[in-house]
Image (tube, rainbow, N blue to C red):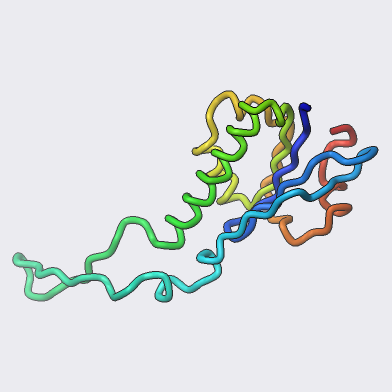
Amino acid sequence: MSDCWVVVADSSRVRLFRKGAGETLEEFDVMLNPDSRLREQDLVSDRPGRGLNRSRAGRFSMSESESQREHSEKAMAAKLAGRLRQARLDGSLDRLHVLAAPHFMGELRNHLDDETQELIRSETAKNLSRLDPAAIRNQLPEYL
């Protein structure tokens, strides 16, 4: 059965809804990313290494180009993109509406394949993940 899905997400939680009876939304799954709520220092095991600057007297701190929190958010977006791709391939997804925090929306776009992106009917770059289903429904087009 083909279906219309609504994704409501931020970096810590993804909520998946289906169009229910009439124009209501029924939540059918939640994906959690508890690492996104932790402080960076709680996610890494130790401080960055130190390097020696030979041209000048002194040392400097070496850091990673991507924080652990950013890595965690990218992994969550990739997991969601994989789930949406699989639903498309199974035939259980034919229309998609995405409401996501702006930064997570960008990460999700980076991970979605072209065929799944073509299913997107509307996008809202706002963090609405804490709203109840009726309030989320009010943010969507009249007809799903």
